[in-house]
Length: 258
Image 1: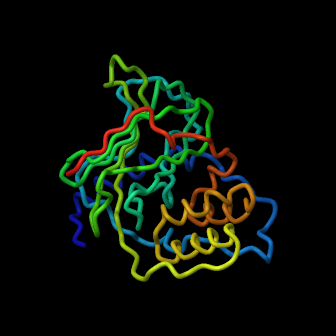
Image 2: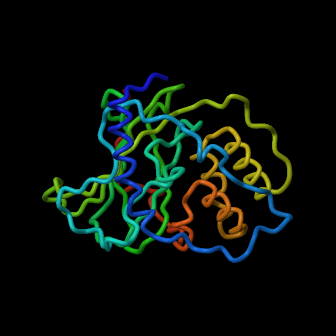
C-alpha cells in the first residue's frame, strides 16, 4: 500500500492528538500475574508499523465548543480502544463493534456513523450514553455489511446541544475490513474456552476488533486475561475503569445501501 509522506504526516499528528491525554496518566500496576493455567493473550502486532490511514478525512478528537465532557488536563478524554490508541481499527466481521473509553460527560446523546472512503454514509445511529466514565461497546450495522479489503471512516459524536450541532465533540478514525487469511478453526471446550481460543486466533491474525469482541464477555470471569490483552496493546490506562452496559439498542438508526 503506497502512502504519501504528506498524508502520513497528517495522520501521525492526529494520532498524537488522540493519544496525548492517554499517556499523561501513569498506567496502573497490576499486582497479580496471570495464572499459569490461563492462556496467554497478547496482541502481537501492537508494536508493528501497521501503516497510516489511506484517506484524507480528518481524525482525532475535535470539539466545536461543546462543554459536555468533564475532563481535566491530566485525565483521559474520549478515546477509541485500538492498539496504542491509534486511528486505524481492523476487523474480519461484516458487522463489527467499536470499543471506546467514555469519560464523565453530560451529552444529550451519542451518534455513531460509518461511511465509505468516498464519504457515502452507510450507517448512522443515535445512542443513549451513561454519564459515568467507563468502556463501551458500540455495534456497527451497515445494511450490506463491509466489503472485502475496503477501508471505512467511523465517527462517534457526543451531542452536547441538539439545537447547535456545531458544539458536538467528535472522535473519528478509520476501519479496515480484512478477511481472514485462514478460516476460524472448529473450537472445542466450554463456551468460555471457545471465546478465549477465538480471541487468541484473531489476535494472532492481527484482527484487533474481533479479538477484543470475543474476549469482552470474559472480562468478569477471566479478568487477568483481559488485563494482559489490553496491556499488550498499550491500553493499560483504561484498566481501572468499568465496562458499561450501553449502546446495544440504538435510540434510532439509519442503515443505507452505498
